[in-house]
Image: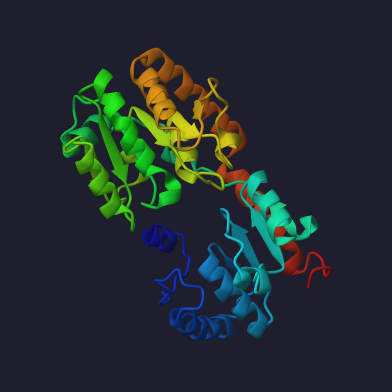
Length: 327
């Protein structure tokens, strides 16, 4: 989104933080670069969005005296380092009630320190299917029923269960294909599972390079079989697109999908249940359409980008002179 930010007049600075290691030297080098930028531009507030940048944001806040706010998008393993060096900042934003409860019960955060602000969707980016045929032609899948997942290739996202569900799906719909958009360390394991199940040519991997709305326009059924999920931004985007969705009954997914109302829920790691749900949707175009319509209505009513921005501004406001209580 760099070009889009620049068109809006937002200044961007690159930092050398291509790591997920909280104690990587890259964190130190990024600290040095950002410390100078904070001083030169008189930055007022630091907002971090991942565990690595959470540590970086806390260091910058302590050394600059600027308030640090952290958004928690998921669940952390309660490692000793995280318990001792929480780096939570002055305020924590949780993206779902499940994440909020996790922070309170596992890390003993004061509930008054946490603001619940679900992710918001830019609805103007979704709901357009005009590029459907073009996208499918580019992938060579014009006449296929297409199941899709958009997620990093991590074990927690459940790609393995989705691949294992495909033989049963293909038994009923031989022309169906599974589209996996994303990259990550799980790719070799997933490739081995595809070979073991003789699914060559039935599962297509693509990097996540196209706008989400364009990619989702090509899909018939969206699946998110996660083992854990803070909220599920990709799922929210699929629902905003108006797709029929299947998700595992975990974390924030349960906040989004009302079973048989705006999507289908299955138990986590339940391969037969996942396969049955996908088969049910592929076999009933009317059901796909009605669930997709209600999914978009649900996202429109509850998860707009405007509400997310307004609620985030309320968290910022005390640090900009509206109140001295949290300075």
